[in-house]
Image (tube, rainbow, N blue to C red; front, top):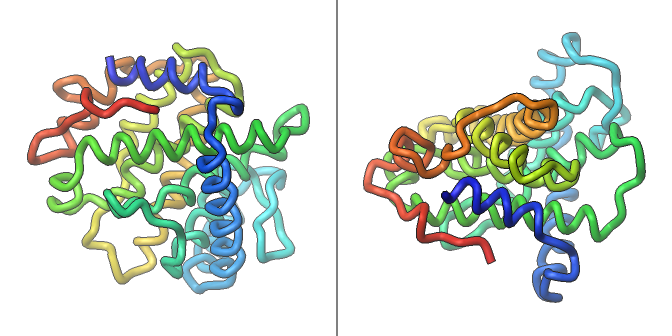
Length: 252
């Protein structure tokens, strides 16, 4: 029931539920990641990705901070996600070494300009917190075996966090959120072997893109397993060589 419990929690979460210290931490994390995106926007990894993929992008809807250009939401999530992590100054969840804000914030920033109405600050912070909470809790459920065997936990959990955040912002139903979680979970990205290369920063960029894709598909009725996290052949059991505690971790 872990997937459905997370989906139900996501839908029910509201800004008044958030303790003041959580709001303060979310705001600090967002300021930090905004600076990281700008700071990494001209790195060769980021500029190379833009050069390689911009010819294939759709209509420009979403700005790329630190540049004078915009691109479509899917590519914005990827490019900004790469920029956010390329210098490794993004925030860290010390219990799991997840860099949580990058994938979540980059997915949210990509989709925001495409929405039919303005999003308030409290709405944005609530979605950001939902995504960060989700990825850190699923990370705790598989730490440390998941990381030790070679997975880059920032991206393997980041896609789930990004999906939850975008789903929250889009006000999806609990059923749709569950499918978004499954669609994100099945897009497992990130090997630690890539550390030291451009591919390391590609991981959170891809996680942001994957999570955004998952939420948008789920919004239109695209389905996945609604036991994607906890099933025998689901995310936690497949990516965790040493057993997992997915049913033990609850969102708070």
